Length: 580
Image (cartoon, rainbow, N blue to C red; front, side, top):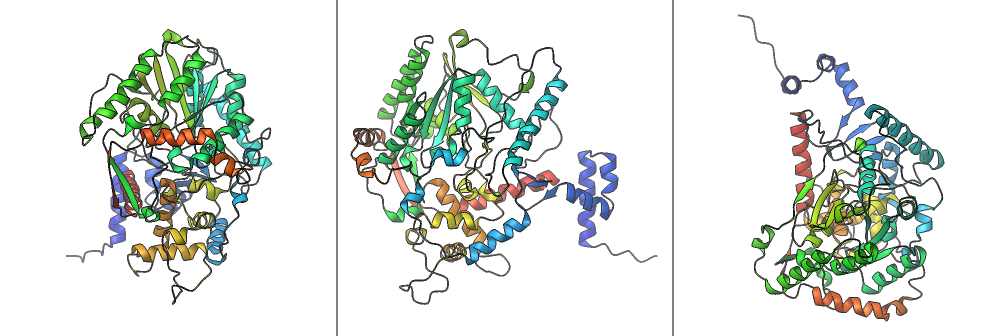
């Protein structure tokens, strides 16, 4: 009997991979090439799967890969609306890693926290957004798709021809996601642009303002969201800044989780996460302001009395019910959620469509990722109807929801417009998925040079023998100190896991527990004026009135790595399912 041929673990793994490929029904050419090393190398060059679930093709990184077993019955591809960003070169990543180790952090002055929108977007330049080219019903679907693709490639060429990759921010390179924006703008009667109050100029592209108010002739409502994360004086200063520079705006202050700003904040609460019980969504601050803005815009053309009645019911219910809140989350409401997954290219709707058709006002919600678009819809409805996530790109196609019979909300996927922002600031703003960052250390350094992270987290320098002695800090030192404090260790060598620590710090900043707020130009010189402004006092009183006084709110120290571990675990599961 001949001796059995040795069969290694590597060969067994290869055999299982080939078996899975055959089950998935890949093309014969690809399947045949999978039996050779050259075929595997070609596939790796064409599409590289990394530990964070992303694929790299040419100079574009495709993020948030979802498992796919082929197209569904309607031809739906779960990866159709993935985030597409420009790829950082390997040399650039290594350069930033060295800088994180060597560059000593110096606190920046308060004046450097002032952001001018003209420096971010340079109005009038090529930092625009792609417009839908003219089309007609006589065009075939293939002709329209081809025309849009050519127009989009020209748009990208102009931007990359005018600016180098080092100057440009991350911005969306996926045409399918921009098509979702086109569809939402075409079907909307009123457009809500949601921004994060901590850095609203980051989320306010002037090109979109000019297009909506000029070419489309629609009303644009600027929603300054998450006002509970910024001082009331700063909120009022930003409101007046936008009123001064963009007079056609209707500005609304909003937060889904209001708190009383007069309550003293414990610095140690950075390590604690509040878990609110009760009718949390019904306590949102801002639905009444938004209703008044829409009433002024519609000017009686739409009956919004049902919306006002709904707000009154929500306020009464929030005042009356303060139980565990579990039954409220599951209560049945009269509204119906409709998820739109159709191809928007050939929809019979254009900019010249009838306004307020059938007596219904359609309100489109647009904005960057992680500004709280879905949370705003939940706050308006009074209960959770749209899933929310800190992961950019979570909303992959626009969704419509009837708030009342005469008011329809439309949630658009988050879109990143081109700008000249530092990419570290984009990471802190939640525009780039934290779990998929190749080099998070410089973003931590950007944060630590603007707020005292070491003092807030009570970090001890990793090389300090005497805790009272002063030592220079770099971004790497902060990550290593945080890893030591939280016990983050690598699996094999049990070294401090600085990458995991950096991700944890970035999530603290994204959640607002390490809050970095930027200021409008001239804010520091007039800070006293803004703090004593009448609108500031009104906002303080309003937040205290609708805050969590009637809810049960408990604080518990949270394992800060849980969100990171969960994200990495889900990413790994997606990769394994996708390969299987």
